[in-house]
Image (cartoon, rainbow, N blue to C red; front, side):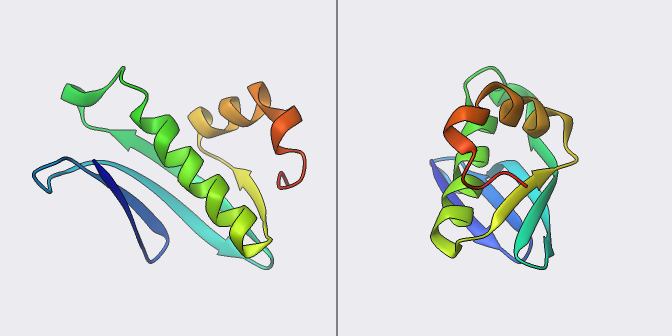
Length: 90
């Protein structure tokens, strides 16, 4: 599996190149807001949404920007892991 970044979007591709997950975000001044995360039904329950979130976290740290979320899944992930994310959470 591979995660690729497009404009305001991370896509999770299966080994055969099929898009099986996505995470959308909005660029704000010095931050990004994650608005949606989704994984295809056949691939749910495998931790793939978390892989997308981790890609967003890596982007924020690499670009030295803050992260926020309106996506319920990501907001809950941030709440559960806030100690390790204090440097980037908005």
